[in-house]
Every structure is written in C-alpha cells, then in structure tokens.
Amino acid sequence: MIKKHLGFSLNIIALLLFIPGIILPMFSLTMEMTANISGSNLSSNLINKELSLLATIRELWQDDRILVATLILIFSICIPILKTCLVSWAYYKKNTDIERKIINFVAKIGKWSMADVFVVAVFLAVFSTNHAETVNSKQVSIFNFKLNLLISSETLSVVGVGFYCFTAYCLLSLLGTQISQSGLTSK
Image (cartoon, helix red, strand yellow):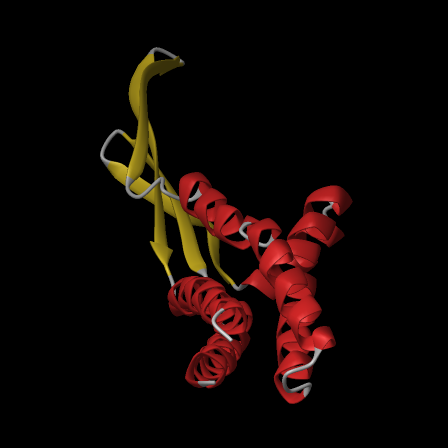
C-alpha cells in the first residue's frame, strides 16, 4: 500500500514539474552577425529568442512542419497528460482488476513516452551550438580602393529552466509508475 501512495505522490510531483516544463523557456538562442569593413564595425542580431516546448510546437506548426509539431505534441504533451489521468484514476480504483490493468497499461506506454526524453535530447543536440563562430575574410577592390571585409557570426544557445523541469518530470513520472506497478505485484 505504501508503494501505491508513493508512486501516486511521485506522479503528482511530476505533474507539477510538467506544467512549468512545457511553459517556461526550454532554451534560448541568439545569433549575431558582425561585418568589419576596413576598421568600421557593423553588427546585427539575426536571432534572439527563447522557446518553451509549447512555443516550439506553435512555431513548427506555423512553419508548416506539421509532422514534427504533431509528434512533439503527442509524445511530449498528450501522452504525459493521458498517463497522469490514468494513474490518478487507477489510484482511486483501490485494489481492483481495473487498477492493475491501468497501471500495467501506463507502464507500457511509459516506455513509448520515453520519446519525451528523446525530444529533449534532440533540442540539446540541435541547439548545442554554444559559441559556434564563423569568420570569412575578403579583400574587395572598389574603384582601386582596397577594402578589407571581415564577416563573422556567432551563435549562442543556453538551456532554460523549462528543460530542467521537463527532464525532472520525465524521470519522476517513470519512477512513480514503476513504483506503483511494483506495489501491485507485491500484494
């Protein structure tokens, strides 16, 4: 009985982490371009954004990347909400066959929802361009004037609070479900 309460409690804590995990910025990305023309600098911010999981889905949808947006929505939003609802329902169906079936089902889809962790890993891989810099140097001749042209860009990405909340949600949710499932088998 203790495992059942502990598993349910961990799933509730996970849900409390899930909400800021999808709302708060998961990462921030800035990209700056600088042009140096014979000693004069011109610089411009090309990209400066913070994206949460929900904002990323919305942006992907608006950019007509429907498949990617849909997959992230299903695996990172819909399945976690479904899991939490089912675990809560099972918790209140005390010592019944339906409780056992629900917990076993949640444990099975929990393995599929490891795609949550995959999504977070992809975010990190894509945006791990921290301080990536490119530099191009050219000498341009205009009306016999030689100009040195140096163009550089720098990309900086930083992991946000949403990333840590979402990762903690994933781990606690899996742990809570496993503990709930082991509480069923120990009866």
